[in-house]
Length: 562
Ligand SMILES: Nc1ncnc2c1ncn2[C@@H]1O[C@H](COP(=O)(O)OP(=O)(O)OP(=O)(O)O)[C@@H](O)[C@H]1O
Image (tube, rainbow, N blue to C red; front, side):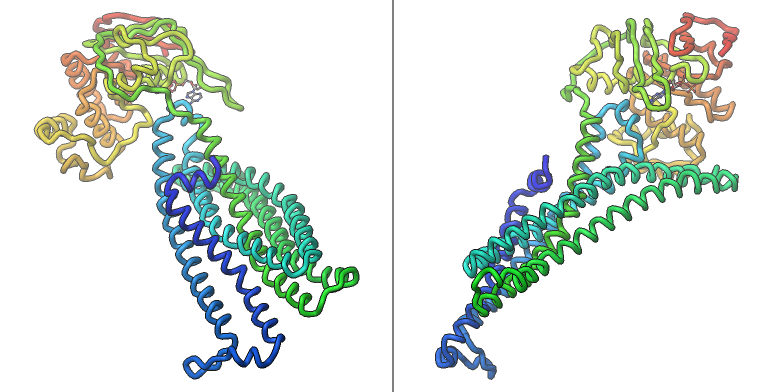
């Protein structure tokens, strides 16, 4: 995918029309000076001829009325074509920017959780905001580039007509200019890739300020150190790189501006000594060169924007490679199961630069409907990792996972996910219940009452009246959403960790047994050893391995040494 493809795919007709108008404007632009020069040279052919073409239009004497009319028409056409071309492309760019963001979001949603976790939220956020903006800006520069390129080609054609030797000289000068201009642009482009990486780390640092503001406010020393060692350090690295890039671009642009004047100097002081050129031709050559300076400068200004857009496009492509869509069949498959079976199941987290690769398994385990399975163990023993495998967010690296007789694979993953509801430790609470069945209003009210939230939140047309709640209350709403989904497998990752003792009791002694009574498979990741007695199966994990499985534990509760 190149920049043209990226833009052209979205609105090919409009982009083509805009480019066409831009080219036509450039074409007309290229003819303006030859037209003026032709009118001047016709004047020198004889005063009588010139006088014969002078007309009085609206009390104003206009010489070479024919030329003047063509000149005015061309100017008006250029004004119209350029404006329309830019307006169309600006609007297309806005549409594209919005579509690109939506597509990126959809692409992110189609990727695996493991890949997205590895990328991190800051990078994803920068991709959606910064890269999209730069790609669109680069795209917007394209019609101007095209207009100016056509003008340049037209002017060079005129120069060829005027003087072949001067044309060759100018062509060589422009070729030299473009080649030498590429050297700084090459370094600037490489630096831009670095700047883009630094932008991501700066975004991460900014996230630290936003999400860590409470911790930073409470400790002045920590705040100062964070600002100095993290934020300022990243900002200053980014700033320095960006300043270097700007210096290179400005220097290169100034050099580009002067190319035409170098050529004028060479023609005026050197070229004339080797070639016989009439004064009229020399004047025409200078006028042409001066006129060419504008388009050359505009092309030179547009090139960096396009280079930046290309770098952003490459960044998007790299990220896309990293977050390739999961190979899952979208069509729903009817599946019935009673037991989930893990056989020699293994999963390894992606290795990172600073952390040893953590893996779990091999694990042999079954989780049955109508049973509460507790997964317990010390911090970092791999409970949440197992939870994400069971909710089909992590694909096992070895072994098999089966729902009934259906192995989890590309053909079944998406369908099986529709059997699962979960509240993760880093859950996200949407402001509404999607796909809210109107008929379930009574059930909804009953759940709100059961969760002791009926005085706090109302639900109107599926939307929560407020999310300004305590952590524990927000988690109750997340539970409510999961319960409403009425799925076959429920996974709760430390759900009760921030609930008060009264509500812990409700969760473990009422809600979970109630789900069991409705023949749901329930997986509870928990440190609440007071409630281990309600488990039908207790899976004890240690260092990524299942250390022990205890079935049908009886009161009194287990004493687990974590
Ligand atoms: N996204 C990730 N990328 C790489 N490694 C990870 C990732 N998430 C977890 N890990 C590794 O897996 C190990 C186990 O993490 P996990 O969250 O499964 O533990 P846990 O038993 O749920 O711990 P806790 O009780 O503290 O929640 C961690 O120590 C870490 O090394």
